[in-house]
Image (tube, rainbow, N blue to C red):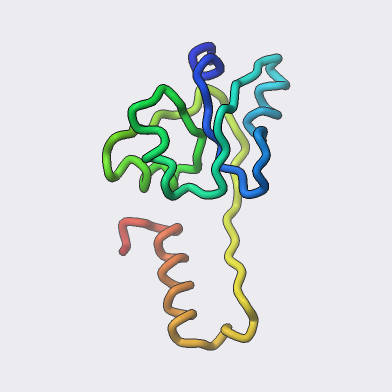
Length: 117
């Protein structure tokens, strides 16, 4: 945990915040991390991390994608965190569009069982 808190951190923040649920959890432990970079999405994060000592806390599915190309590695967090649910949202007008239905089914399959693809 000491090393985790001492390292510079990147944060994926859709709102541009420099703190998140990890910071709230660390605060309960009377700890703090130093976020030096915030990005609005996961893609491109591996490029920003490669060759630096910056670390990022990301969901398992994002870690799998980020590490697949090499250059970064994934490790378990040194703290227990809550789990999150993922939800999909789309325009109701496209409920019955065959292409949209196919895409939603593939997303469900991937997040339910990535090996099934």
